[in-house]
Length: 526
Image 1 (cartoon, rainbow, N blue to C red):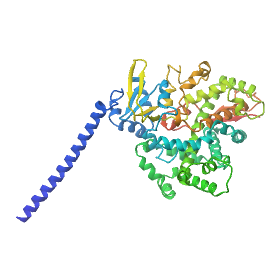
Image 2: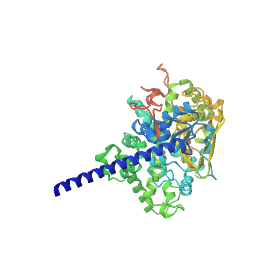
Image 3: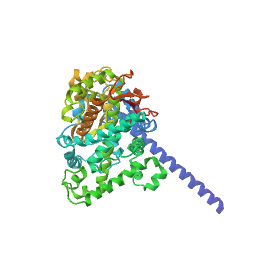
Image 4: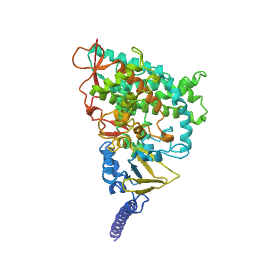
C-alpha cells in the first residue's frame, strides 16, 4: 500500500513538473509572439517600410552578418532597391540611404547625438572617446584628444610623414633589386601604423625596423576583426576574451595573441611616459594627455591604453586600405596616372619630397583621393546615431511621404551604399576622379569620415597622409609601359585585379575576397 502511494506521488510530481515545463514554454512562446505582433503592428517604427523578418527579430541581421560573415550590408542595399530610401532593418533600427539626410542624423554642436548600441557592443564598451555613449562624457574625452588632431597640429607632422615616405622608397628599392613583388597593402599598413605609433608614443619605426613589416600583428588584427559582428550581439564574450591571460589566449586563439598583447604593451609605454620627468606637451599624444586637464580618473594607464589601441587600430587599416585601392586604380589606368603626374610635376620641384602645402589644393590629386574614398571608404560598417532629445522627420522626395523617426531610435547610414547611388554617381562602380572636377558639390555627399560632433578624430591626419604619400610615390614612379625603353623608376601590377580591392563583406573596414593576396606590384628601373 505504501509502495503504491509512493509510486502515485512520484507520478503526480513528475506530471506536475512536466506541466510546469510545458507552461513555461507556452508562456515563452506567447511572450515572443506578442513581441513579434508588437514590433510588426504596434511599434512606433511599424510605419517604416522594410522586410517583416528584419522588423520582427534581430535574428535576421544576426544571420547575415555573423553566420554569413558581414553580408547584411548587401541585404540592406536590396531592401532600399525594393522599398525606397528609408527602411527598417531591425526591430529598433532605421536605415536611410539618402545623402541629403546626413546632416540631420550626424548633427553638429548644439544637438545631442549618441552612438547605437550595436556599435558600442562591437567596440567592447571600452572607456574610450569613440566607445562612449553619454554625450557629455564623450565631449570631455574627445576634447582632450582634439588638440592633437587639429589641422594646425597635424600640419607639423610633415617631417614625420616624410620619414615614413623615405622608408617606403627604401623598401621599394629593396624589392626592385631583388626583383620581387611588393605587397602594397602591407607596405601602407606599416607606414600608417609607424606614423600614428610615433605620434602617440614617440617610439619611432616599429614596422619598418622588421623585415616582415610586422605582418603577424596585422594578421592578428584582421583575425580579430573577423569576429566583429559576433561581438556586437554577444559583447560579454569579447570582454571576457580581452581579460584572458596571454597564456590562455595562446592556446585558445593563438592568431589573436599579437593584437591582444597590444593592450599590455600600451600600458607599459604609458607608465614609462608617466614616470619620466615633466616634458613639453608637444612631445607625443600621451605625454600631452597625462598633462591635460582631464580628471585623474580619466588618466589611469588602463583607460589610456584602451584609447591607444583605438588610435593604433583606426589610424592604420582604414587609410592603408584606401591608399592600396587608389594605387591599384592608377596603375590599372595609365591615362589617369599620367594626368596626375603632369599635375605633380608642376607643383613639386623635381627630386624633392612634397609638402602638404604644395599639394593639398591640387585639383586632380584631390579628385583622385575623393574618388578613392568614395569607392573604398575608411569604414564600411553602417554608422549609427541616436537622437535622444528630438524626433526626426524624413521625407521621401519621390513619394512625398514623411516618416517620423521617434526620439531614441537608432538611425544608420552606410558610406559604401551612399557612394554607389547611380542618380548621384553615374556608373558608380567606375573609378573616375573626373566626376569630382565636374561637380565639386559631390564632396558634401561623402560620409567616409562621418560628420558632426562624433566625426572621425583622425580626418586631418588621414588626408595629410594620403596627399603626401600619393604625391611622393607617383611623383617619383611612373607606370611601366612594357616597352623596356623607360629610363625612370616604374611600377607594374603583379597578378592583381579589381577583385583584390573591391569590398565583398563588411567587417568594420572593407574586406575583399578571401583568397586575395593584396595589391602586388613589381618595381622596375635603372
